[in-house]
Image (cartoon, rainbow, N blue to C red; front, side, top):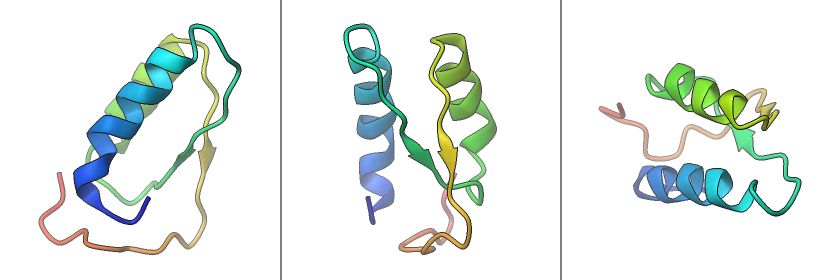
Amino acid sequence: MESRHLVDFTVKAALDCAVELPLTPAVAPNFNRTPEDLMALFQRGIWPRLLKGAYPGDVEEFE
């Protein structure tokens, strides 16, 4: 995912799909929203991978 406009959709899709399928989403640690996204994933029993040296993409003023 290279666009901040897809982050909400992707996190919601991971949360919805995890009900039926095991999955391991990748999460970029350099966003302000990452702690909340991680907590939402952990609460559903989803253990994501943290990206190391992630491509920053269009992260200017990203929340």
